[in-house]
Image (cartoon, rainbow, N blue to C red):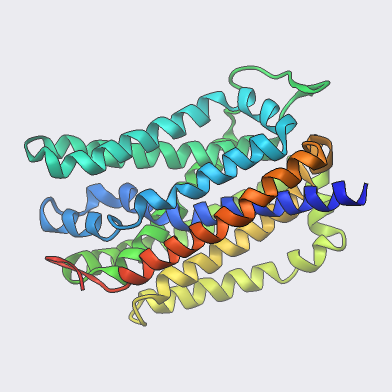
Length: 335
């Protein structure tokens, strides 16, 4: 029983880590796609695209790890979540496909570049909204009968899930603006600062709205937020959010170029901490715990051996690629 418990917690942490890495790394390039129509056609859009060109496809490795890990380590949760959220999950995958195809073809088919730019933006928006709606649908609850999904096809669609989708759209856009402030020069850099100045207050309002609504979805959220030990994280959270927001605002106003991006990551860290409190120890909030959904201990141990080899390799090549392309983007690429 002890081994079973430990392995289940380890796998929960692995999946949480993979999701966090995906949000951090794919969030900013989705954000750039969301902001893409607001940049001038030509050099500005090319510079924005070049700012993510070396890293964007590797960022999605973490989505594969998170989804594959959920299926293998928590098969019951996977079997319930997938039919409950078919529509937003398929929309997310189609959005990512459109974005990837548009990214490649806009360089190889300049005669239809306007079409590919529109597809890049649309794919980024659809993928982001779908991720936010999926999160909102999980938080509001999934109807289960026995060990199977018992809800309807459209249960995922609600005012709350649309609110979380809009909040993630704004948040990714701010993260993308922060990346462009850090990595670009000239007009793109100046425009990105201007966008960040508008998006930061909007993100704070959106996060506040989601946070205010969440405790009323289920009594368990209220208990986890306002009863110890969750209370010890909840109480300082507004101060941490205010501090990160203040530092991000100062960075946007003229601090070092990397500050808006990293302080926005601080805001994301605060929201992810809040989500962790809301979910733990469930994999489907209020319905299925991580231990109820877990695969047998032998299966978890077998997968853990491969994960222990692969994750350091992924971290190594990811870190190396970011180190190689650590400068700013000019007319002729990174320098």
